[in-house]
Amino acid sequence: MGKRILNLKRNVSKLILESTTTRIFLTHPEIFKFLMRVYKLVKITTNSLRLYFLVLKPIENVPEQTIFVIESTNDLQILRAGISKVETYLQYQLSAREFHGFRVLKVHWSGNTFILNSQVKLNRNWRNAFRKPMQVWNPKKDDIVYFSSFNNFKLLRARDFQKIQRQCKIVTNIYDILPLTNPEWFKPYMVTPFMNRFEIAYKYSDSLIVNCDYTKREILRFVESNTLFEKSHCKVDVVHLRDVANIVDFRGEPLVNKFNNNVFFSQSSKPLVILISTFEPRKGYVQLIEAAKLAWESGAMFNLMFIGQLGWIDEETFAKFRNFLEEFESSAIWVSNASDELLVDTLKSASLLVSPSLGEGFGLPVAEAIKLSVPVLANSIPTYKEVFGKQVVLYGQGEEYSTLTSALSDIDNVIEKAKVAMKNNSFDGPDTISELMRAFGEL
Image (cartoon, rainbow, N blue to C red):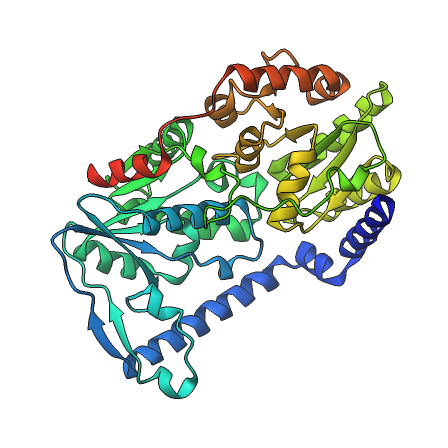
C-alpha cells in the first residue's frame, strides 16, 4: 500500500513538473499579474455598484473601544502560504474572545467602506442582493482598524487609507520586508507593489506589528536610509507569534490523524527529513539539494521529502530540481499540494524538519515542528537565532555545524542534539493575543 501511494505521488509530482500551467507561471509571470489586476478592477467595480442600491445602516456605537478586524482576502493569493494560517488564527482568536474595554467586530472592505463581516457571507440571490440592508462601520476617533496582513492592501488605495486615518487609528501586521532588503529573491513584479504597499502602511498606520526585534530593526533601518519616507508617527511593536503554531483546528478540537505514520516511506528504516515551504529562491531548495547529494555520497542514510507548492523560480533551477528527483527517486520525493491534516500527520512522522531558508520574518513550519516535539535543523539566520535559537540545531558560521552538508552527514547526532535542545528549553512565552491587545491599548 505504501509503495502504491509513493508511486502515485511521484506520478502526480511529475505531471505538475511538466505541466503547461507551470511553465507559463515560470516564463510569463506578467500574465498572472495582469489577471490579478483584472480581478481587482472587477471586484472594486461590482462592489461599488452594489453599494449604490443597498440600504446602509451604521453599526451602533458602544462605550467600549472598537477593533475592526479586516477579514482575510486569501482568495487574492495565487499561492496559499503560511501567512494564511497566521491571518486565520489572529482573526479567529480576536473575534472569539472577550476583552475588557474592547469590542471586536470582523469587517469586510466593499470597495468604498467596511461592511459587517457576518452580513457579507449571507447567501443571497441577485434579486434580493440589492434590497438587503447592510451594516457599515461607524468608527470613533479612538477605534482601531486592524489589518492582519498586507494581503488586505490589494483592494485598497492610498486615498482609502487616508480616509480611514482621518476617522480612526490603523494597525498593520507586517511579517518581513525581505522584498525590499533582498529583492534578488523575488521577481521585479513583486518588489514594486510591495514597496508601494509598505510605503502606504508606514505612512498611514499608527502601529506596525512585527514578530521579532530583528525585523523591527530592519524596518527602522530601511526607513531611516530611504529618502522616500517622510517622518511618521508610526511606531513598530513586537508581538511574538508562538501561539499561531498550535496544531489544532479553530474549533478547539485536535486534528484527527487519518493517515498511517510515515506513509510515503513506510518500508524504510532510514530517518525521514522534510522541508515544508513554497519552492522559491530564498527557501534554500538549491542548497538542500546540493547538501543532500554530498551527504549521501559520504554515506549518510536518510530519506528526503519536499512539501510545498511551486513558486517563482527560473527554468534552470526548476530543471535542476526535476533532475534531482529523478536521479534520487528512491530517497527523495516532492509533495506539491498537501492538506493541513496530511501535512500535520507527515510532520508528526518525520525524524527531522530542515529549514535552510536564507531569510524569514517568522518561520511557521519550524514553530509547528517544535510544538509537535519534532527535531529541527535550521539555518542560523538572524530571525531563527532570535526566535528558535535555543530549541533547534543551527548550522552556519560560528555554529557547531558550519554547513548544511556537515549537519546532514551527521544526521543521527543532529536528531539527538535537537531532541535534547527541545527538552531543555521551553518554547512557551507570552500569549500572542494578549500581547497584541497590549499593543492596541498603548496607542
